[in-house]
Amino acid sequence: MKHPQLTAEERTTLGKKVKKLRRVGLLPGNVYGKGLNSHAVQVKLSDFEHVYKQSGETGLVDLTYGGNTKPVLIKNLQMNYATRSVLHVDFYQVNLKEKVKANIPIVFTGEAVAVTDKIGLLLQNLSEVEVEALPDNLPENIEVSVEQLAQIGDQITVASLKVSSDVVILTDPSQVIAKIAEPTAEEPEPETPAEGEEAVEGEQAAKTEEGSEETKDGESTDSNNAPEETKE
Image (tube, rainbow, N blue to C red; front, side, top):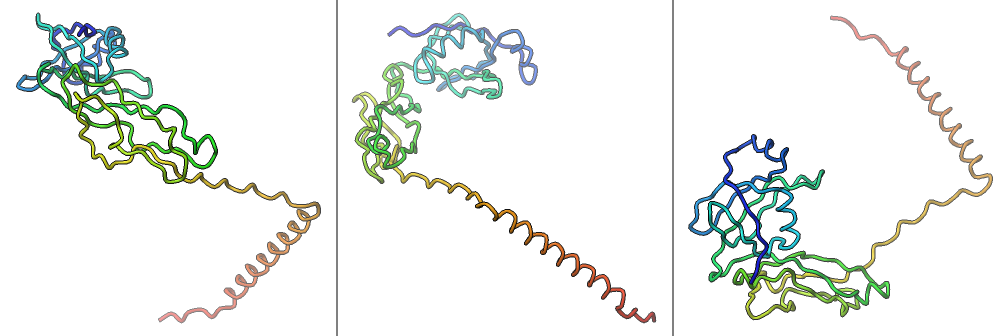
């Protein structure tokens, strides 16, 4: 099977100095794997973004570095979410004959009857599940139809997911992926006072303020008439 191609170079810039690499369009990363020492590498950011759009984190990439080309999975993306830019990436080197574990995104298809009929809300409890398979057999995503969800309390669990026989789902089968919940109650709109009520409320507020001032004055007078403490 043909995989996207990406070329990496050995990276000697480490630590906080990697900021200099990003300024010139290079993305710092590491290559690691089972029984493999970690290697610091760097790739052109534009090349990486192009490849990542094709492979995501579940598709294999043929990474060339140090004179060799190895199949890898993209892992542990570090992002600056304010600028939506990639800061660092790990490449996990795999053996095509050994199974690997990966988190696969769940994609909903169709529209729940309960939502169409305005009976309830569709809640997604899980956005991905963990699977195990040979690297070339990892699915890009797992589609789930939610059309059969028609009543409050209807749900779909991991046990109902359909995958090929080459893929084993490791996530607890009893976990709920999606369910129909009761719609949230709408907050009542504040009532508009009828004509004349605003004037009455204003008079009551004025009387309350006058009473408060009298009380304060009385407290002040009482404190002036209080007996002085005897000095010893």
